[in-house]
Length: 123
Image (cartoon, rainbow, N blue to C red; front, side):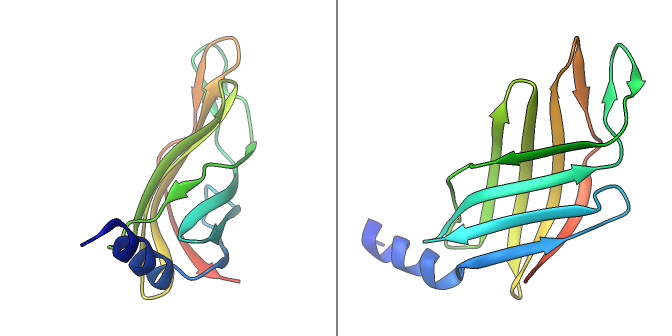
């Protein structure tokens, strides 16, 4: 498959738009898809534990990953600043992104949320 054919397949497979959802540990997660790429993502998690302080409470992050969605619908990225990053490993299935996310960072020591399963539907 040529690079152009792969790009056109990806764009057709991953429709542009905003996908969002929530779970018990992540009350708000969203992805913005344009041109076969995740161009923006945000998440808010209830649990954010740090090595030095235990659970320091909720954490939110907004990033611009520019991550390409493969022709099979898979996308993964880790994007953001050292203090707050959003990692995701997702697959587009039946019009929904399904997978796991994690918010991580450094605040006087390593901090992260657990791996959080999410299902994101088109808004």
